[in-house]
Image 1 (spheres, helix red, strand yellow):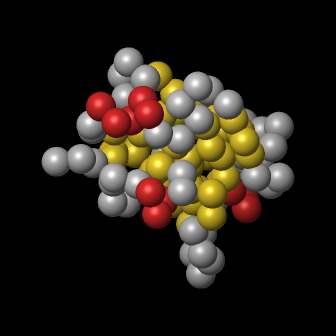
Image 2 (cartoon, one colour):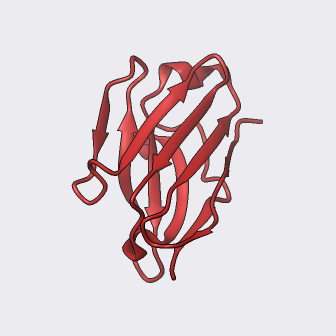
Image 3 (cartoon, one colour):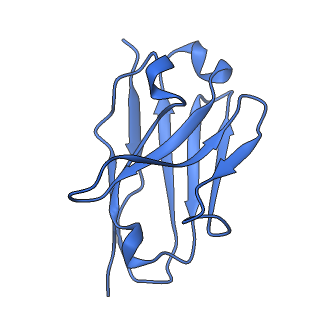
Length: 117
């Protein structure tokens, strides 16, 4: 069964940092462009960062310079280092292939990130 399991979310103060992890099943992980998406209450899910199989990265303007996406193909794991967190970063964070329409995985349970003082 192919699946994605996100972890690492927490409650953090503004300006703080968190590191999210996403464990993927299936050897296809290393071949896929992967991304971190987020969905805030009342908003649509959005892609915030992506990384190709060779390591090329891309970021949404809202997180550029603060978030860093990386991957370990040997461990089939995707990471998101989040620094200088803002209240507007509060959301459930999901990982999946990019674009989602080409993904072999359904959505995981996500990881809740709450930025609040």
